[in-house]
Length: 466
Ligand SMILES: Cc1cc2nc3c(=O)[nH]c(=O)nc-3n(C[C@H](O)[C@H](O)[C@H](O)COP(=O)(O)OP(=O)(O)OC[C@H]3O[C@@H](n4cnc5c(N)ncnc54)[C@H](O)[C@@H]3O)c2cc1C
Image (cartoon, rainbow, N blue to C red; front, top):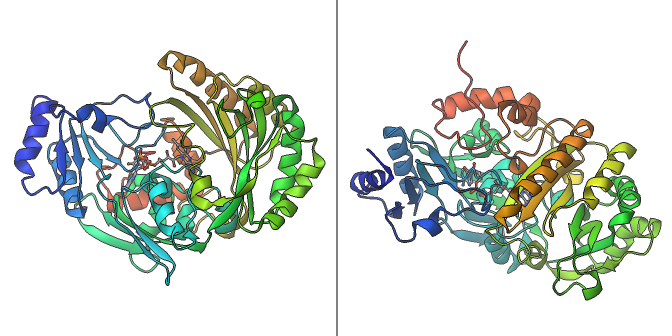
């Protein structure tokens, strides 16, 4: 094959029984089909295989392997590093796999590998149920879950992977297998945190919990009060009941309702809350922090349906912005780190740039570090430093802020980072993020994907026999 168009044509010839769509650069909707969430990622695949079922996935894998082409797998397309696409290779696009089947009696939901969390939240909410995911509804179930899954319900119900019961996976050799605690438990261990390294998940089954209405929203203080607020928060959060999740944030108040006009475009620090329970219990749980601090600029906390909280950031962060991510796990936030946070928070370069500290304690700590591939069970927070802006002209500025900020805080980190919030940062960084679990992952990779067919991810290289 000589170029991308001939690759797409060869696929159309070879994959005559493909049920989905084979999209090449010669298709009128190729530009839309190749776009991912982070506009900084500008890749041109030779073929986008929009699969209709697991059989299509197996055929697309075989085509990529037979033609020695790079292979990327795309769930929701949200990955900051752009790991859901590639240049000059095959993208397996799972956006056609949208099955959602709620069993309210068994309290489970079966979800197609191409669903977004918003789609799942709406379906489960109809039964007053939910499973832990993230903090934004447009993120893909696939990437978020396979990397771990941190969000509003983490302290109460654990990571997304802690609620995964079963998955159907297409392996590198084309076999479609099921995995759970009882079936291929080694594969089940590996996909709970090991990302897309072990195969393409076409279907997930999650445990559901009784979560209908939550008490959520932000409390903001002025950016000049950052050191005082963060110092109080670091003591408060670990002692708070599990029903209360609250991630610390630096942000700029968006210039739109429901935020009061005098606060528009003001840099603030604060906590974004999610309490599973009554308004009264929520107020009681938040009181130790609120009582210890000066009156906030805004306490915008109220009862709302769980999907409303999950989609609260959607308007602020549509697809198509430029994103530069850095991340680190954090155990403690000593005074020197607090001072650095306060400095960099005040220097946020654009309205959408932000820093979040996502809590990892509570139910996430009930699982042992070696029970799943996700090793940092003893960390207390996952820090993310995200430079964000719609204007490509500001890429250097947001990147510099994010890198300088994370470099300054890295000495106070636990070492590794949450793989879902890293850019392409090299092999050692991936190894550090899996710590003691890395060697077992590399051995399983050698069993399930010995040729490293699935390598466009935070890659775990197959362990070669010595
Ligand atoms: C605005 C925003 C908010 C976010 N908030 C959170 C949050 O609250 N909590 C959190 O934990 N993370 C969060 N993330 C990070 C998110 O988890 C990662 O970006 C994740 O990779 C996105 O998954 P995706 O399926 O959308 O991405 P994609 O770009 O489609 O895929 C990402 C990676 O996962 C692999 N993959 C995806 N689906 C499958 C599948 N079905 N089978 C095999 N491999 C697959 C891909 O090959 C790729 O390596 C957020 C990201 C963004 C951009």
